[in-house]
Image 1 (cartoon, one colour):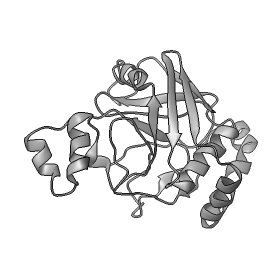
Image 2 (cartoon, helix red, strand yellow):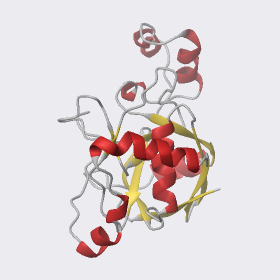
Image 3 (tube, one colour):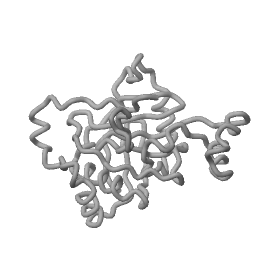
Image 4 (cartoon, helix red, strand yellow):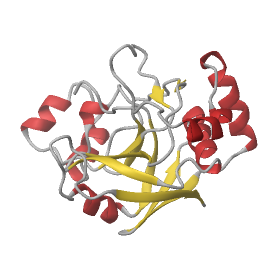
Amino acid sequence: MRVLIVIACITCCFWSCKNENLEIPQDQVAKVLSDYGKANPETEAVIHTNQGDIHLRFFSETPLHRANFVRLIKAGHYKRGHFYRIISSFMVQGGSETEGNYQYMVPNEISPERLHKYGALAMAHFDEGNPNNNSSATEFYIVRGRRFLNEDLEELAEKYKPEQLKIFETIGGAPNLDGKYTVFGEVTKGMDIVEKLSEVRTRGDDEPELKIRFSLELK
């Protein structure tokens, strides 16, 4: 898969000017987010949809991604969000419906211990021109994935520990994304909602035929 995300250009000066204080110079991203994270320790959030709520928990082992997501939520970036890319048995991807995307990228915090298992929360990014697999500032996705059995597990055996293979066998996931994108949290409640969303009708570009809106707030 060449690109997990297509980031739209900022075309509306109103939104760009209104939120330009959230932009971070790339050489200052790590420091700004590190400092922000120390002052803002929240680790839980809720995505509200018309199908129900999806509860999230952020990992402490990915402090920059946690801080970045908390920062955007507190700034209201996801007050009018939408899931704009849906692939059944794979993932649902979302961002803000009305605001532009910020240009900075979050340094990757990829860990072999944080898998793209069923219910994983991760940040998307462009593959091209991004050799370090740094993350988009704003675009995220939740993994539905599939279960792996028999020959599939044998192919994964060289890369994963037995206990990790058991995860892909019992609850499933998307191991093809491991090592490429940062998993920074997980769904703690509401995967039935994610499953419903992943089954909606889509167009040829994986965009839902009917817009799926959401709002995101901290707990």
